Length: 341
Image 1 (cartoon, rainbow, N blue to C red):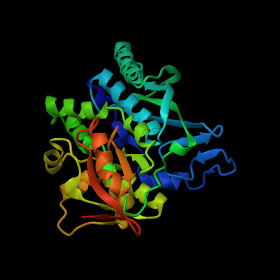
Image 2 (image 1 turned 30 degrees about the vertical axis):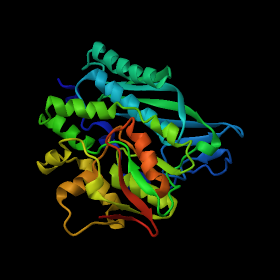
Image 3 (image 1 turned 135 degrees about the vertical axis):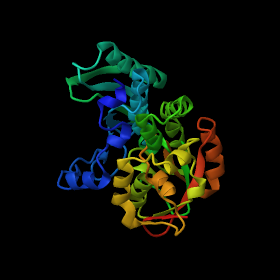
Image 4 (image 1 turned 180 degrees about the vertical axis):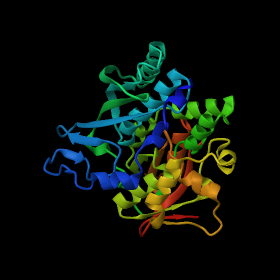
């Protein structure tokens, strides 16, 4: 049995829809009684941040999901890259991880599970951190991910809400991961498609740590399960401004548009649109394919960077040394919501 056949969904497409998540969390305590908690449930941000002293903040996050590819080692590599990304998205440096493992032990070969764990360990080694422990359960579907701890100087913490009107918006990785995942599950993806997606999904977002040291970079977030519109909306709401996104400027995986046009969208894409559609203005000539790309759930996607306009070209050049498809996709503006042009 293929690994993807053991799960009803895969990657960050498994996430609860943003509207459902807001409803579930609306009565939960938000932690303002702790002055050291700089970022917590009150913000729709990528990780929690706790200030230890004047020089050090601790960053904590967790992320896990079901397989989106059939190769066990690649599943582990993608899941680990995705989990570590939240630390980089806050401007931090990861220092260690804990494994989160749920496996249908009666229907999976232990050798396959070991391969998943080995893939995660490979990425952690690339990031320079140990997997220092973890927890495992017997579950009906395969689940793997990490809890990750990082450190950051207080002045380098980058929230998703720091964007200023006029800032340029840079996206560091191409979109289309959810579309490719759907094609893999349906058997429509070529070997080249799979290799391209895995290469993108296993590229660490360590550039976030470098960007956080630049005063011209005002905000960071990673684009994952809610798509570029969903995570862009979180940036806009937190910053109290609007965003303008140029659909023609969006970087894409090579066959994302083709596969979207042939019906390889995901249920998560529809949920993402339902959550933000009332706050998004679309052009009259937008196609279903373009809207699908805007709401496509990314797994281990890129960083969305808000940077002062005078520094945008210089910062883009720096990012492209690690992410060649990075592009300026729009700007922050006065107002609210998102306008797609």
